[in-house]
Image (spheres, rainbow, N blue to C red):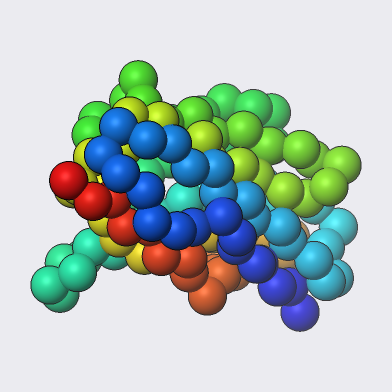
Length: 120
């Protein structure tokens, strides 16, 4: 079993910064990728924010490019999301996803989510 635990959410004014952390623990031999998703209020679908591979290659949603940076410490099984120049539309519950390989397939483990609220 694998657990993913997020931390670092909170309330911030527009233009401010927050740093989210996600640490994976449990029966882990290796991790393929780690990512951050978010779900905004009002029944919106969960969307990819950023994802980073084991080798450090990162992808970002267009809406956060230039403002958010994902990084990873493989030794600690931890991923970070540095969020700068936050906007009210970044308000959402942010979820961490950890992709663990099992032979020819992989499984995504999810954290419980952390609330990010950006006030205008």
